[in-house]
Image (cartoon, rainbow, N blue to C red; front, side, top):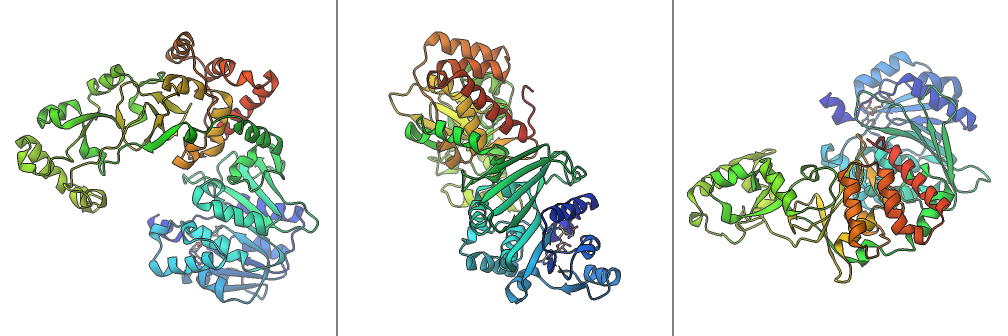
Length: 528
Ligand SMILES: C[S@@+](CC[C@H](N)C(=O)[O-])C[C@H]1O[C@@H](n2cnc3c(N)ncnc32)[C@H](O)[C@@H]1O
């Protein structure tokens, strides 16, 4: 399995290959000169042979090449042992179709030389090195340079390609050079044994075609009729191709709505919470605070949103106390001013000496990058806290809290220090409207398991239809949360006091539908 991970070997199920071939035939694909750049055991070859005039199959490993040579002799297939990253820059051949399932290998697992080659392929196309985070990106870029005019790429790519920020420049580049982009997703996982969600991406230039991104969702790869199909023509560059699940008119509606309201970045200062360099060692439970006699050296902190009770929208003193009473880690060692360890209580000295030697990966904690660059190594830098905290990952509804306890959090939370004229509680209240919630889904990215995440730039652009809310309405919202009312009830109540002032009921229904579609796509069951 590990060597599979190093070489990015996950073989494509036959049904998926069948699907791809039939799809291409429907698209009247030119099969005159086909390239399979990471052929593995050659499983694409039998079906390609039925359609192609000539196929070149590249594979890095000799034993796989030998196997293919045995199984697919003859002049139709040229099987080459090569590194595709070399092949892509050296060959003069150009192809009508490049098809396959490129290796997914994290940049951190790639050798230096390999990475250098990948950088060259990216930078020669005008993209920055930072785009190159995974081997599949180099395969996409390498393939782009090998196409005949009007040629096509049809790849199985990780779902993250559609949404991650590092690939945004790549998506923009592809939108420029291909007038026809198809994204094909399946409700049932294509590779059920691995966690990686995948999609099919078909890139081509059709004669007389208006530029568009088509999104198709099928139940599984045995089906031939999509259960959903959209085409994006106006909203380009689309930035996140995963958002093509909405149609053009819904995207325009959401974008226009977003322009009506202030962005969070214009309502206050936003900064992540504290980076400790080792939460396990620097954030202590009540019991440990006692044991290490360090009460005077700790600050209360919320390490994770999951420690906060469900159904609240305020981090109050009571919430902080509850976390500590459950003996969860809730106290941050605040020792940046304590340069001389000998002045600390003996029990704490012993603890720090022990903690400093604990391995994080292969390195003792005190020698890890974060700790080794500060003096003393155990002096966690304290940053400012805000009256509102947004935790960057959420499942159900965004986790945004009025921080009445003025407690610190780790960098899992973004702290908002609002401008004086903005009331924190009203801000949190107004956040739970359909437009803001839909925008969180639209701007964020999602992972397996249905979690949505917003990185700081994505969060800062979120809009809030802010207005000051009366105490009795705030109280009602707290009650709706506390009594576990369905999301729809909460959102309806907040909508009534926020966006209903600007939009008709029907439009609000559409925003709600947009939010629902975007939420369901990340496989998060609404209402759960
Ligand atoms: C995800 S598997 C796909 C195999 C097969 N095409 C399929 O779809 O089942 C990727 C293949 O790429 C090969 N590979 C990895 N790095 C490569 C490189 N730099 N050049 C060519 N092939 C490579 C691996 O050995 C593996 O067989």
